[in-house]
Length: 152
Image (cartoon, rainbow, N blue to C red; front, side, top):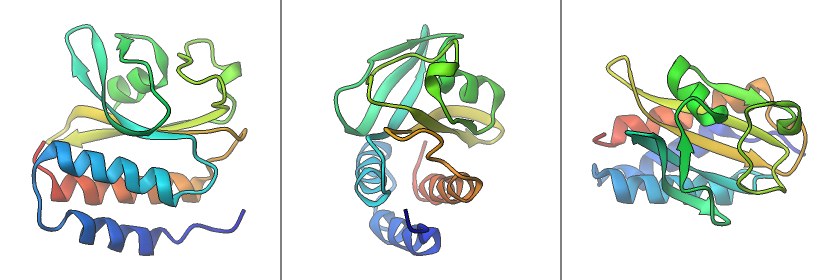
């Protein structure tokens, strides 16, 4: 797999979102963009806080779990710990929640605004160990551009 040009993708994200501040259209376009532009991805989307955990937001890919119970799963871990979580093999992670059995690895970036998590952006891959440190830094940059352009 060739290297992803995250600088180019960031410029494209900024252009895609430059004239809109509303969360729903920006999140929908952002998820669709990441899903379509990153290689070896089978899902990309948002989970947002709810009283009982996290609830599904805009995404690209197959239908997903609607609710992730508080305290369970990789998305809740990233949300609670305010840090990106990368899992090379989801089958080796006891608290992984399977929404798509084809997913083998996962990267979750928390949406941090004023020091508080406002949700997460989750990316899944059908390949083991799909996400490198370059992917983590690049996807975090893309999420940063999304947050700068969006009222959340």
